[in-house]
Image (cartoon, rainbow, N blue to C red; front, side):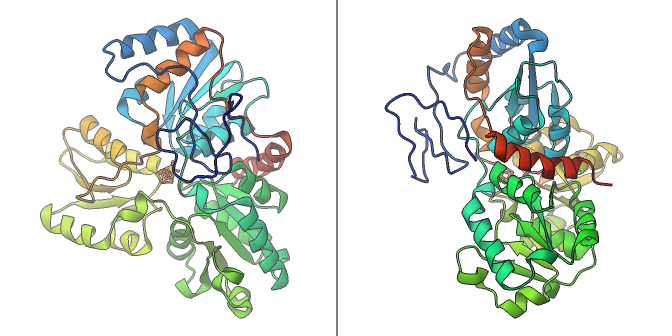
Length: 392
Ligand code: 13P
Ligand code: SF4
């Protein structure tokens, strides 16, 4: 996988994991940033007007997509909003738009590039908008895992099911090995499809979505799911454990949803009598078990919207979305499940200054922060994404 980072002469990619506010990039990671030119100051009172003017000047040439976890200052300029499944479909829906500005994270922009025409430009306003979960599975680790499954004699009966939240390289691996991508809104359908094709599933990289779907939706037992640790020889598993497993879960997690705890569920039930606890399936298994309802971002929004006035919800997902739900439904009680702050810091990298910077550059005819997946990777990854879009 390669991503065009537009590095200027003399700026070397760095393997450093932490590139906070840096001007360098790490092409092997979801993290990394380079921002040529000057960003408008965040304190500029004219930013909203500038974004409006630039968007109007671009007209139908630009299509702005916004994930639900984006800041409200950004979401107000999105032509469409959605969860990662909806946005993958929406990305394809405007083949006439020259520029697709993706207000989300890097793996989503990569998927949009794969699904759109070659002459469309997909732009991520801040290249540091990565995903720590996607970084938990690298192409080398996944290739090594497949060797382990091959040595155990189970690779030919194993179907990879990869969560959308992974790099284009992992999506390509999935496509090349007859698997499918899934999102939190179709993981059950993806697993059912995979079990019709093979005997076992390699589910990457979110262990929680994989486990919650396998156990709570598919009726498998916890013992039928094993955890593959890419940092241990053989994934930390014996050959017998691998052969006995139905689902091999990659040891990855979301650093935002992984923070919700069972004690927070117990605490909110005491604090808010009659509350419905509604969580995302990226949460830990014990949290999902303790909750009343579980579903993707789009499901959470719909559930709150359709509830009668006076309904009370404690929501376990990204804080930007929970705050927006509260503002949009003043007739309902919406509380955040944890007491501690739980924003997705990388989603939050896309702010109004970056959006204005991108749009004004486009008005000048300059494409900045373009995300391009190399053709070979894109071809295999598209097979896996198309398979997801075709799931029954
Ligand atoms: P969905 O958009 O599928 O709900 O996933 C949530 C998420 O964590 C996106 O990064
Ligand atoms: Fe990644 Fe979690 Fe942020 Fe989604 S919410 S982008 S999975 S870190």
